[in-house]
Length: 88
Ligand SMILES: N[C@@H](CCC(=O)N[C@@H](CS)C(=O)NCC(=O)O)C(=O)O
Image (cartoon, rainbow, N blue to C red; front, side, top):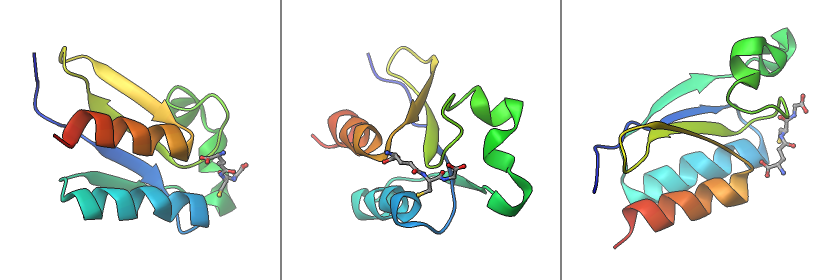
């Protein structure tokens, strides 16, 4: 089973943050971006903690193969997910 990608990246310009932007660009995947404002502590807001309970960027949502939303955090696991899901 495979559903369309619906990648949404939540990030800002830090070394961990840009890792995922680079990965997505290298894989040629379409994605939306929401910039997280550290100066406003956006990464600690309840809506963001629903995606990453650690309150840190980067984080990512996508539609998994079953069509349900998947929420990811930790840059290494996000890169692993993107390669496993989209590189054939
Ligand atoms: N091990 C995590 C580290 C994530 C991390 O430390 N993110 C930092 C920016 S590079 C952050 O969100 N800092 C803001 C905070 O902790 O409130 C990863 O690889 O994603």
